[in-house]
Length: 178
Image 1 (cartoon, rainbow, N blue to C red):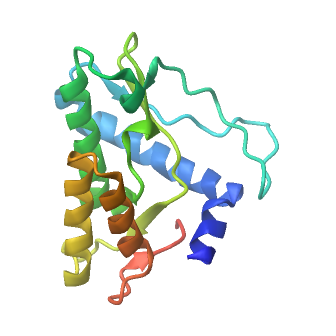
Image 2: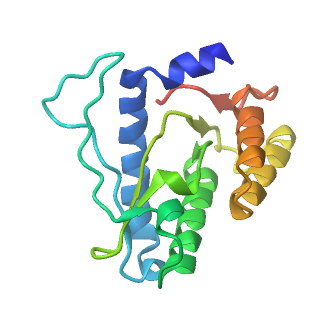
């Protein structure tokens, strides 16, 4: 929708979403430490002291050899993809936070330092998880999104994200960060 697109292009909103993502991934590094096998997640932050307006956002450099998409096959490829998927699912089911537009181009990989740098959180959303259960109308789009991500089906991913971000009849979706 037009409102969603305007919200995604609001750099002040993006800055809030980046900070939320950074907190989630920092916690995930601790919670998943035994499974990371030396890899870490690091969200590039908003540059301290730089101007931040509705139209301008200055970020720290996301160092790396390339994205999951551009690197092709590398020694730890399957492991890194598994970690990314696990982080996305843990973010959703344990933190109620999800980037609804995850794709291989949004993860910068630094092979030397074994760092995964997720970027672009303009479409991230928070979901109410206090009940510990998903609402019926949330299950199908989430399952579709997970399947599309695993199959690298960008059209399916976009459609599932659209279903999630168009608003939930159950009222469990929130569009702003707390």
